[in-house]
Image 1 (spheres, rainbow, N blue to C red):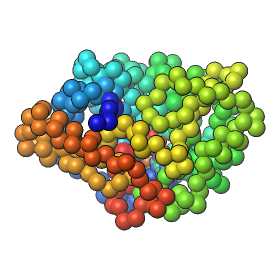
Image 2 (image 1 turned 135 degrees about the vertical axis):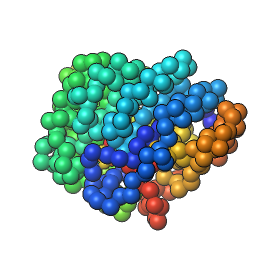
Image 3 (image 1 turned 30 degrees about the horizontal axis):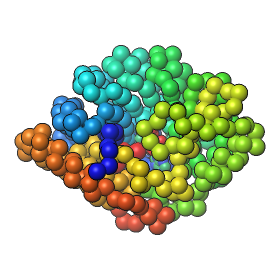
Length: 320
Ligand code: SAM
Ligand code: SF4
């Protein structure tokens, strides 16, 4: 059986931004409060899964920082001795105000999504976000010790391909890892993703016109990034190629949607309703058996290049 030590938990499908490739501006149907997993349900489930080897938890969404009292969930998860790492992926808008409380609650570190360092372009891609807020949020996260901060940059041909080197300039003297992620044909991006696809090998080549990169197998990540030191600099760079470098055979991810569905593969429209099982009073043993079967059935591969088809979920509803 695959060794799964990592679970990604979406805590909400709501978001304070509307990135054009992720969420439509209007008309997304949002979950009702009672459809969301409560903090206690998430905590009990994670605790039940510890004997399977789960050691790391990533909170995501939607925007996890808009889930009310998210610090309380982090404290609960932190009280499970076997959970070594609790991380969170955020758009960074609320980070300046919340970083200190998150750290105190026991969060290990954050990944901040940031697709442009240009105010106008940042507004265009997020529809109304403030770049300044995200940049001050990143500084605050570093200051309170949510390290190492990672920046997630979705590479989009014709939008931010003129900024790839700027991102390296930006992290060169900072303890930040910038990670370039291929745009995936999911939800809102679907066909556009193929047209605007910028393969990670080409991004690396472009960066190497200015910087020397040195492969580093020791950089700590939970996922499929290929990591490099920027020679002479403090920061580092990672590349995630879900399309051009499929990593399905080594995928150690288990995704849980905000409404309590396990989704063994981000791309494949197959979900297992664990919340229903929990609310019907399942024992820890029954939950473990349920999850073991999901892990055993984790698909060998995906056909992302064929597009999203008629799947109903958007990325914000699955949990990125
Ligand atoms: N709201 C948080 C954020 O933006 O970091 C967490 C959720 S978001 C869905 C998680 C990540 O998924 C972000 O880095 C976002 O850029 C990425 N993402 C969303 N749609 C994507 C797509 N179609 N292809 C590649 N990455 C995508
Ligand atoms: Fe919100 Fe993150 Fe999706 Fe952007 S990528 S709309 S910030 S959930």
